[in-house]
Length: 81
Image (cartoon, rainbow, N blue to C red; front, side, top):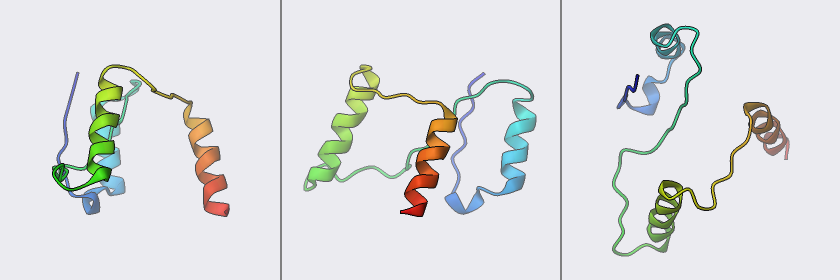
């Protein structure tokens, strides 16, 4: 099952998370978050970097994966810095 939610970040509330949990009850899920805004690719090196990154992800090049525990540890360490 694939479901796409297009919402404002302010709508990411505990009740939204609960609704997702109920929709995918007791199933492993993947969550991908991206901005719905189109990058300005004409004048920005940043945008070019993003376009390249998306291309690499789509072709499975330079992709790094890690467990949620590793992410949480890294996020906690970054918050403490």
